[in-house]
Length: 59
Image (cartoon, rainbow, N blue to C red):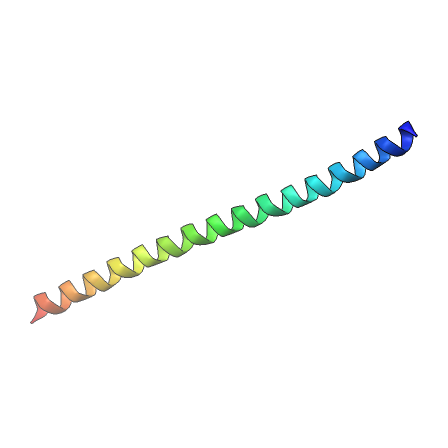
């Protein structure tokens, strides 16, 4: 009986660990992509702003 309980506990821990790992992995990927997106948006705004400044200064 004890062995069966310990096996069940181990299985539960495995699924818990797997779900936690998947959650943390997806969370890291989401945060990283959000960071990359915000960086690209910042860069794009900066490029647009400099382009407009160049355009207005040239006229």
